[in-house]
Image 1 (tube, rainbow over the protein chains, first blue to last red):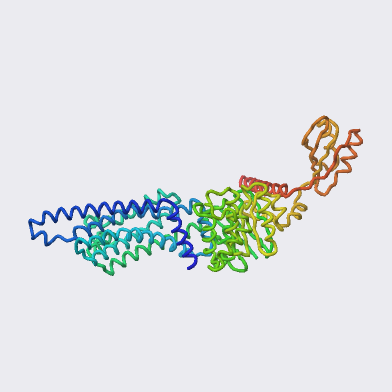
Image 2 (cartoon, rainbow over the protein chains, first blue to last red):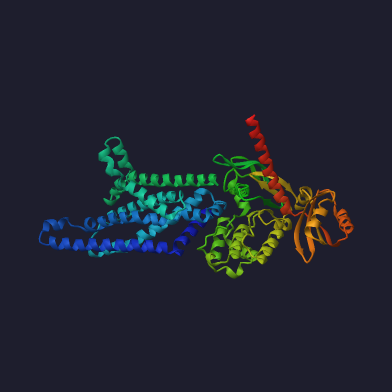
Length: 256
Length: 327
């Protein structure tokens, strides 16, 4: 446990001593802020038009017009941002050779991987938490559904945590950070859009690609539903790529 | 104590080390020598549990590197070649990380960091970023992390490479001070360093151990010839042709000639002292003998001889194989 904490603290220090984390968080917040402003503007425009039509006015609510689209956009922004957070995790250690020292300290390989994973996940949590005050503002102008909001954030967190595991695995394969980031983005995008192939492929492969698609499982969270099946999917996705990272480290050891 | 038996490591089909056997007793400082690509780093990586062996056994303090890797890693301080550090960290924060990684109890960390920093002379740079340090200080930070937690076994790969003469002397002193309370394996290309610091030497070439003894014994038993230097007042070519005829002399070469004085390097069979015959030959020819001294065979000579012998043996066995195949 001490080893895990040591790796976790070193990784957090690594994020905040380089400008990368600050820039990534700043870009994420600026883009999310832009979407928030655009959605609010759209809401006020639609509300003005609805003043002449009470039937439409009844159907307009903050959750459907602002919260849900904002969370969906945040998911897409995370797809771009997470590879930038994970690209250095193992690639930098491999390039500098510091992985040789790290793997000769009395820290088990799972503790090394988890220490790094938890640090990246905490950064994701910080990014998501930083968008939360703008959501709280909505309670001042209307009545958004807090349950939907919570479920949406939970979905984004699970998705982000799963992509971090994928990104850490990819970074353990290469010492080039650019390759690491682009390969993580490509793989994450593939998992994102996998369900699009379901109609083309037909049964049974179509059902399989649908089940493996991130978007398919994230959609329930956006709708305010937290199902055990979706939570299990993200947990297994994360565990699978962390396991592959461990195998990758073992291969690295064998190659000496 | 370190025991290595039949250690073998393959990278694909290539054997980096093959059937390596040696033993290092507690409190010993052993020099691990070999040309580049001989298998030194591979052996060290197996001993530090970074990389598993393909065959054979390596035991540290009686524990097998394969079965008790984590326990062994607690007992080892390792300084890899090129000292890979987290350059974006400050020295103090880096040592704090290492202390935590090596399970130094939280209450003792500050004391341990101060102790280690003092032992390698890092007190002045504790607040500096590692990337801003000179090569010598980076090397010291590398040594400091190896010493953290007071491990009983130290494995140091080229600890003095890139240091200035003063720093080299300080680091050598430090390593020498470890004798009797720590077991040290020291890999280096600087052979005088081995003679000064190490109790014993293990020479590895092409993945196999070719010699293992104290530096003094190696120099005594593996010297292929005895050497002497002669300075005479005579022409260089005449002196060479005369001294080449002295019984036991294998070769004579000129090392310098100035103002009619010739300095010659004589190589003779190892068991023969040719100095009286050399002196007699010079006197009988009527030249002035200005200097005659015997030169000691250095560890460098032994090292070069051993790895060249290996290469020659290999070549002759390859030739034999080729001839057999042709027949």
